Image (cartoon, rainbow, N blue to C red; front, side, top):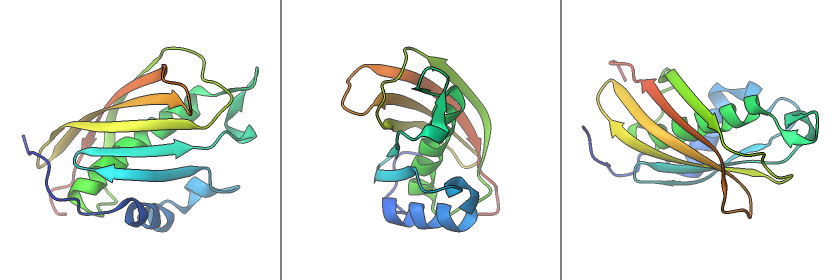
Length: 146
């Protein structure tokens, strides 16, 4: 297992990288933001917006899954640098409670960062509420030729 290395990409660098390689992420306007990157961690925000809602006015499951996946990807990029072809191989999501009508915060933490695989967890919260609304675990495959 690899321990935390010096940060290779800042939050601003990761946002610029995502803009370059995944411009479709912001189709219809930017709602996902990389707020912070630290050793083996990242924090992202998804603004509350009508395109992310399901009937009943709550943030949809697919939006929560996307934020969890993005936050994990940001934590990995912070450690390994700009590797576009690092890909999700699994994502397990547990929806714990209905999110509030507020931005969603995703706090990612890498549990293992190896040469070819990264494993992490993401806790999602409604902004301003300490109760977790969703917990996800995921694995990423990291290409050998990075």
